[in-house]
Amino acid sequence: MFTYHSTVPSKKIIIFYSLELLTLADNSSNLLSILRGKLILFYLFLIVSKISGVKMFRTATVVISVLILFISCSSEPEFRGKFGISTGKILPGDEVKFMYNSDSTNLFGKDDIQCVAYLYNDKLINTIDIQLTKKGNIFSGKIKTDKETLGILLKFKTEDELDNNNKNGYVIYLNDINGNNIAGSVAGYAAAINRWGAYYLDLDRDKQKSFDLFIEEFKINPQIKKNFLQSFFEAVYAVRLDDRDRIITEELQAIETMNNLSEDNYSLLANWYSKLNNEEKTEQYEKLIEKNYPKSEYIQEKLYLDFRVEKNVNKKIELLYQFEKNFPESKYIRNMYDLVANSYRDTKDYDKALEFLKQNKNKVSPFRFYVIVKRMLEENLDLSTALKIAELGEEINRIEVASPTIEKPEYFSESEWKTDREYYLGLNQFVYGSTLYNT
Image (cartoon, rainbow, N blue to C red; front, top):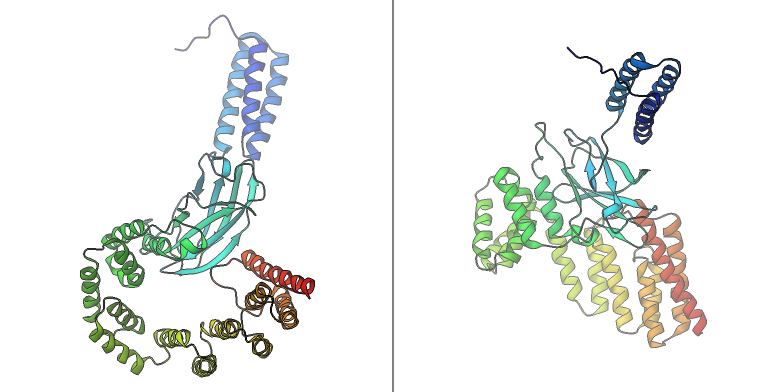
């Protein structure tokens, strides 16, 4: 049986420990526990001011115990890491909550930190700005995924600095219904390392790491390999120098045995048999693509490459117009218009360059005006024509900043896209001012 000692704590000791608990309540991140703690302490001070001795000790002990219980039950766990996500399964379509502490990063002490999220499956799906909320040293945010999302890569940045987790990115794998990494999430990260993550997040383009992640994923989820073969082959070709031809050929032969091959299957076969210098197989699959998929990406890319090597500018224009007629929605068209403008620049036919740009001012990229005027300034040639091109470029870029006609690329968030358009406007204004100064 528990027996109280005859010597009981004084009121000063009780008050001292009460103040310690008050500090605990104040440090809690939960407002409810702060209010409860202070209310109970207020009641405790009233008690000890009226009573003394053993009765004071018993009463104070009960109240302090209740206070500790309230604080411990009401407080949220404190986040102490660098990066963390909400617990529980995160399925495609769910909202992901995350926390970020910059204390151990190169963004330490920065208040203007921004976050950009890259949603991916076997390729980059979309890039979005994430609104951050700061509480103490911790930044938190939410990301809404869609049903196609397998994983997310994040970067944190200020205007001048970037934290991409030591070139690894902050990666979030989504889950299946059992709580495991969803099939394809690790392979999607491997594909990012292999190519697009290096461009847009400045990840370390570690082909060996990419290859290892692919192998890890394919052992667990072999059914998803077919969705990642292009990136996987690129990693194999880079790191398995002694047996890459055998590995890739075996995979290609496995595809050939499948039923109901798709356009992507035929394109993969044609491209990689060409890479392996198997002319017979390459020709076989090119003919199949031309017959069955005359509008395919493979055909477009082949014609685009033919266009690029053409040196005669008039022939180049003919190829461009025919291509545009056959593939009006192709992603290659704007580049082709740019290359025609470059051809006039390279031959120093600036009058025709001006005429071409005026006729196709909404078909070339906004950057093209700057490129041509910059060359003219460097060579100090025909500055009156340069001024007209610069004026046109300044006009087009102002429109693009205010009301863009070009669709946002999937690798830019909205804020990055706006910054990019403003940057091109600034470049055009610079050469416009330089031209004015020199004329």
